[in-house]
Length: 213
Image (cartoon, rainbow, N blue to C red; front, side, top):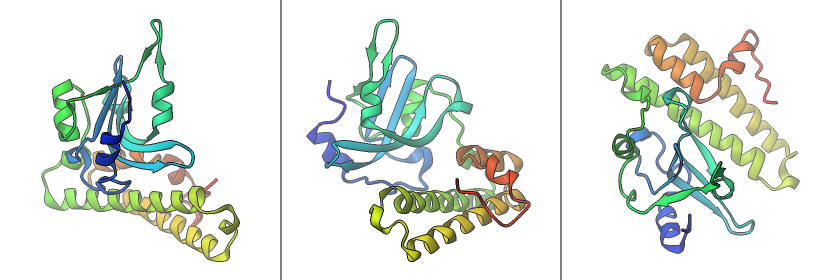
């Protein structure tokens, strides 16, 4: 079975990277991939025709429990290369997942998941978590665009360098906010820390610099 075909591509083209930011588990799943106890629920995609690659974004559960499952990027080639021993099982695509939300599919499959956005019904808490999550996602995407996708000849341009410095400075401020914010409980703070791997950043927050290497 093809993991990507023309029909599926047309659906993904309506959901480019970043198009479902902030929806969390209520994002529409465009493609469900699975093998063994591993599941990838893809909600967005970017097509690199020159390199014949597809970058996907979505929720990945590798069968290690909800604490180890996460939202993130994975490529189509990575999925195609996955082989599960001892029988050499390959990743397949669920033909009946289209149109359902990630939450609906997790419930149908029986996947446990932690939706920190819904842990507290207090409106102020939820809004604060959403805002920080959206901000960190936007900053991360901007850094990715500038560092990894910009033309090599422009990477040393002073404007690009200044923009990156500003983005990382803003990232540090966001981490400070998570640490000091009174509008999120400890659980929500911890979920954001884990989602964006901010533990290392917190270790160097004694100063005003953030080592982006």
